[in-house]
Amino acid sequence: MRSATALKIEKANHAHISDGLTFLNDLFRIDPMSQLNEPTDAYDLIAWIQQAFGYMAMVDYPYPSSFITPLPGWPVNYACKYAQNHRSDPKLAATVLYEMSNVFYNYSGDLPTNCVNYTVCGDTVMNSISAPGTQMSWPWQICTELITEVCSEGPPNDFFSDQCSMYGGPQEQMLISCMWSFWPIGYNEILFDPNAIPIEYGHNYAAASNIIFTNGKLDPWSSGGIYENAPGIRQASKNGVYTFLIEGAAHHLDLRQPNTCDPLPVVNARFQIVNIIKCWVNPQNCSAMPEATPLPPLGPLATDDCRPIFHGYPWGQERPKIVNIIKCWVNPQNCSAMPEATPLPPLGPLATDDCRPIFHGYPWGQERPKGEVSTSSPHTTASSSVTLKPTLHFTTLTSILVVAFIVITA
Image: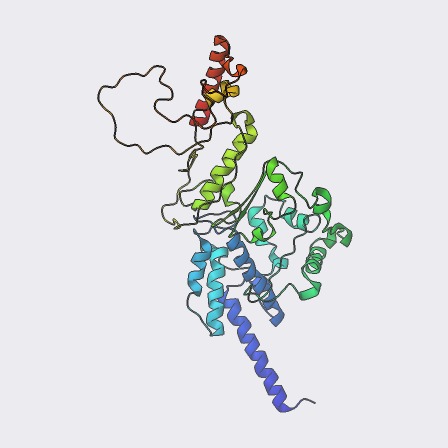
């Protein structure tokens, strides 16, 4: 028989737990369908909070957005304002978690309650971003041929507790979740195939061509991204394969509508990507594929008066320099190498008097382009004196000027 003291302690603990659950139900405005009634129900609330933090990081865009739910610009910074003051009291700490989670789930203030048990109310996030009848398409993908192992490692890497070592590891956890979700329609362990992607596409990118891999540094999914150290990527660079790690960018920000508040690295990455794709589509306009250049530093972040930009290319970025290469196009035998673009000189004083047209004045006092061979050069061969027929010369030159005009005005 238990002693009277033990019974008093048990009763006090039960009352303490009951009070705590009531406090959480009230604080988080938990829907009656998913109320916390037992201590183990708190795991549902923890998962609900963790989901808010993960998705908020994923859609940490610089301007207000509604890709998943309505959110302010830079929602992570916005939510973190609630946690600026350290609160050691458990109830105050819980209040901070509620306020931060509420930014993701109910920034608009339209939801009267929160359902924290997805087995009761479904995956509210997938429901919000999926067309009717397709809510389970992504869960099915990640339970069959696109297995993703996602878990928190605990401190110091994550402030959520270590989940990676629970239940046999992340892959086993994923299988358990998939079995629970899809067993009613005949799902079994055979359908869970972690090797589907490497079998279908391989693990080496050396033979790949015309791919641009971009990752946003703010995006949690970037941990599974493809970078220049991936197998075969360096070899594939000669085939038009590029990688960009974009500072200040969340999930696919580079693919979203350009905005006045986009960080500089995003703007420049988007500019480089467009130029690469232009050469893919019209290779005849490119003497060589563009080389990726380092993205600029993040710089100050714009947060006010964010507006979408339409038809804004090149978004304030420097266009590829157009140089006088027509002579080398028309008479390549006169050029030991194609001219290299050089920075244009400063404007300087403007001439206003005695303005006259100049005929046959090339090179107009400028230094000859690098690689151009002078016709008086002792290295000129017999073949270098060959000229095109006037009609062909004029037609070719006209075509080149049209191409140059298209490039300049694009």
